[in-house]
Image 1 (cartoon, rainbow, N blue to C red):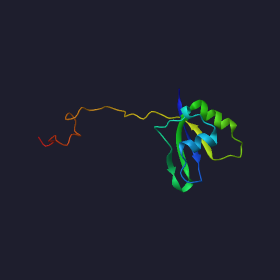
Image 2: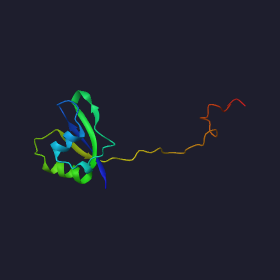
Image 3: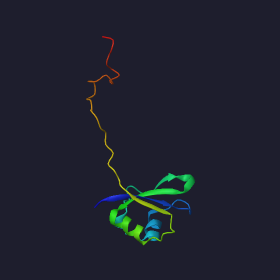
Image 4: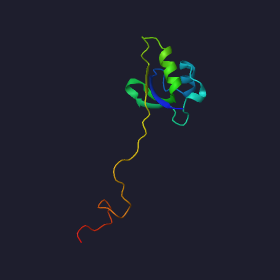
Length: 101
């Protein structure tokens, strides 16, 4: 299944996975325990977590229009290097290579 990022505002200290499951009605197997709950803006009490797309959409659809403590879902884009990858010792970025010769 596809996992999506969601942001939540949590004003009662740092939330646990169990608290989020209870508040938003997410099933335990719909949340990524390895990702956990990540604080992304301490001044705004903003946290992010990774949940199944179906759970994110269900939570979004069940919230009232005046509820602003939930944002998302957002895609969880894969981050990979791009461009040419050089083998160690073959490029000018190698600190051991003498460029003066």
